[in-house]
Image (cartoon, rainbow, N blue to C red; front, top):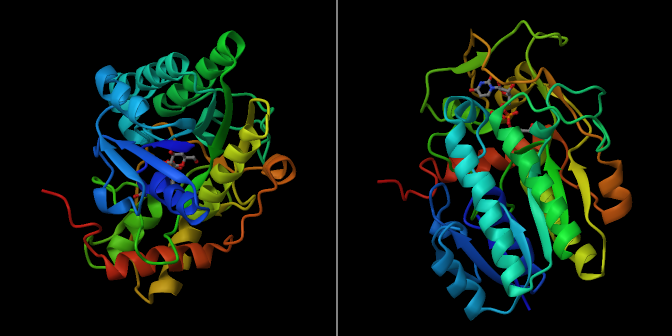
Amino acid sequence: MAILVTGGAGYIGSHTVAELLAKGEEVVVVDNLYQGHKDAVLGGKLYVGDLRDGAFMDTVFGENNIDAIIHFAANSLVGESMKDPAKYYHNNVYGTLCLLEKMKQYGVSKIVFSSTAATYGEPENVPILESDRTMPTNTYGETKLAMEKMMRWFDFAHGIKYVSLRYFNAAGAHASGSIGEDHDPETHLVPVILQVALGQRPHISVFGDDYPTEDGTCVRDYIHVSDLADAHVLAVEKLRHGGESDIFNLGSGKGYSVNQVIEVARKVTGHPIPAVVEPRRSGDPAVLVASSERARAELGWKPSRDSLEDIVASAWAWHKSRPNGYGDRA
Ligand code: UFG
């Protein structure tokens, strides 16, 4: 039986494919290569195309014996989603609807879903529990919440079981050095800071220093991408063993401010990394820190790379050895 990984050529998808291959799983990847990279897929079968293309997806389901899906394919930028909500509803919500319809058509009843802390919005409690209120402050989070809710009703009507994994801030790169983060444009804090250390940007822009946090900059919970990948493998196992639908946070439980991340990067890279304070970015909650107790208890998840210094060091090893990422941009 094969696992279909949508968005498997992307950042978190490719690290998950690597873990699945290491476990001896048969892997099929679907990716439209909008953000993904062919070279990020370390094995398995890659189909280049879009989830919303029914004939293409018929080929994928027809040619493979798929029993479970890990669904990453989506747009995932908070800032962009506030400027172009339609893009997020099309790719994320409609894309997921197309996928669920194909699952129903081909009798595939297990899906692990790449969700986000952005579903919570401004949190009621810190750390955030899965049972806390979901009130997204940006279109990206709103579309991911809509996708989760869609899966809930497909479970009710058609018995499609889902595990939704709400990630906090993914960072770092694979220990082998062969895969890492490479987006265009790059907007995530850790890679952008490292681009400054590589001399590719003059400074890091700090988006707001007047938040109600200790140093005034936003606090996030950074988690190593390979720890996230491990959780997907465990979630598939849970569903294969007849597990019910569920939702889990994935984070380290520790929060770091933007200024603290910059400081850690200065230490890791030895570069001064100049910082310039700029206005707030629209849609950013002040503090997002996870409680991942349920993932630990119910999935048996044990994140093992959770010092921020190690996470930044692994990202730095990747960016230093591949300053132009996969080098496949036109
Ligand atoms: N930031 C800066 N300067 C930059 C880039 C980011 O100050 O150049 C700040 C942001 O304002 C934010 C923090 O650094 O406060 C982290 O920003 P990222 O863009 O790296 O990440 P986000 O927290 O916005 O979003 C990420 C993922 C989402 C996910 C979310 C969950 O992109 O998919 O984490 O916390 F939902």
